[in-house]
Length: 271
Length: 70
Picture 1 (spheres, each protein chain N blue to C red):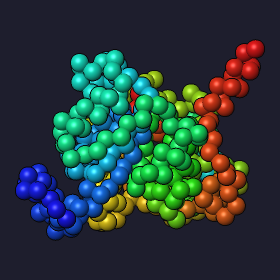
Picture 2: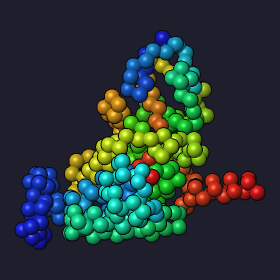
Picture 3: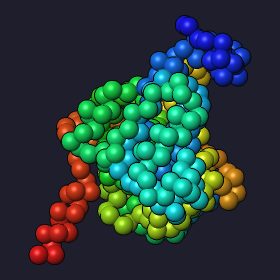
Picture 4: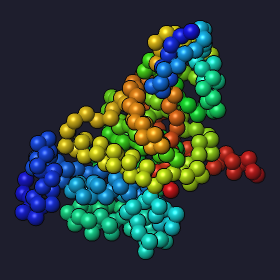
């Protein structure tokens, strides 16, 4: 544990915490977290993890910054419009905390690359906007026994759960992705920008709790909130025996690119 | 009447009421898009109609929520 005086100063509010201290800060420094999606959720997650001094932050996103992103994706600024999101995010992280090693993947997470990318990290944060990738993250993390934080936001609502090996996974609660367009996304139905911050900071806190071993993770629970009434609920869940990936008789033994399959089907129907 | 809890809020339903009927009464537009827990146990979709609610039951409707990146 060889923190410089400057680092001791930078992380002093963590070090002051009895549950964290210098040892906890060292665990954070040794931590490697993958943030999937540099958008509404990924932005606050990446910023708080960078500020916290997480040793390596991986960011995967294939998109470029759009003007309509700036209402909530606080890691991207007006002058970044048109820039790859991973580049924009990397620049901000470096300016915020040069201690952090940033690893960028300007691509989509797919069945082909998910295991290889996720394998290199201690904790994964789902900040994606679509169900195919949410299920992909779940399946890959269950297969690799890698903890992750699921996050979803819509309109004024948010939901999150943390998976850790042997706890309920996302598929225990939601067996399979909804049909395309059955559930609206933020780009279709809108979202209050600050909701992304509310949920993203919960996810960042879960990642830091995992790295430091402090407290209890949001495992076997689903936290939901409605910001209109500022009502938070924690629903207890259980690992499902019938879960298609982590249950007694798993039917899913390899990763699935749902979106691809759906596109293939609709393409075939068109011809 | 049976006194149950739906998403944390007390609700009274006629006796008997099935889970499928409760979903109708709660105006759940797309039952396929909802996961249902009864007393913390996940209920298979095929069992909604055959599952009768009783006093003290806790029902949670869990909704898909995407969002975050785009």
